[in-house]
Image (cartoon, rainbow, N blue to C red):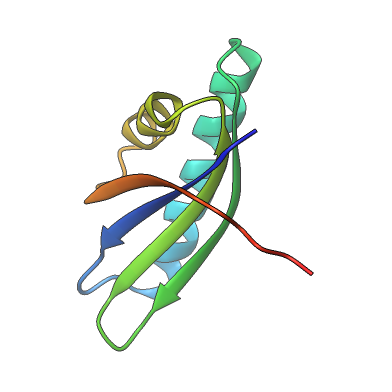
Length: 87
């Protein structure tokens, strides 16, 4: 399945809030998957210097990723397909 990156700007977020956002993304993805929407949260990278965040999801399409993030009430600037190159 394709991998999608969700780009966010999270100015002023605390580590605790970031952890809660991650949990919300996992919970929303799991719920949608149980309902037949193929989407899985992979991981988050946070860039503290400028409060940017990139979250990776495996999904059937970008729309599934958008639904997961909206269900988690997480703001996002962009969703795009990426190549996640792991050794």
